Length: 135
Ligand SMILES: [Zn+2]
View 1: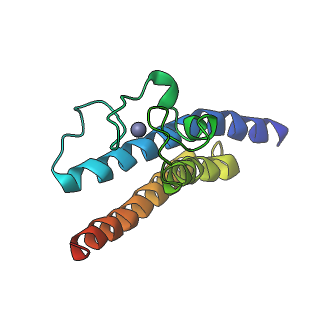
View 2: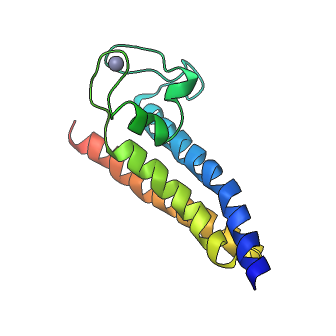
View 3: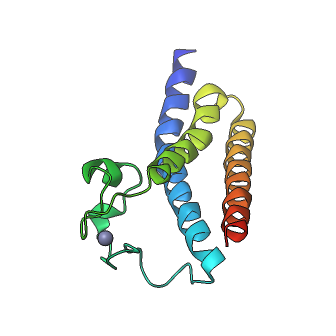
């Protein structure tokens, strides 16, 4: 039993950065695709001042906290929803594994990935349709 809890926690520690990174990636995709921009180029930058984000500014959630929620180039506040959705993505992938990961890995990954995709799909549809109706 203790071994299984440990096993679940170790797995969760590995999944958390993956979930955060996926959240960050979906955030970028949803920001760019509706505008017809490339997902791959240019590298992440501030929309206000074009300041290109360095490696230390690209860490999901932590960079936001380290910069007190502001762009390092122009001090413009960054949307609070961004780190929130990144954190939720991390939690979506991690929590099922933390509960049943080592006894039912397929279930844990299935539920985690499913929650992640459904959540982003729902948010994406809302964001894109909202943008369209507001002109
Ligand atoms: Zn900026």
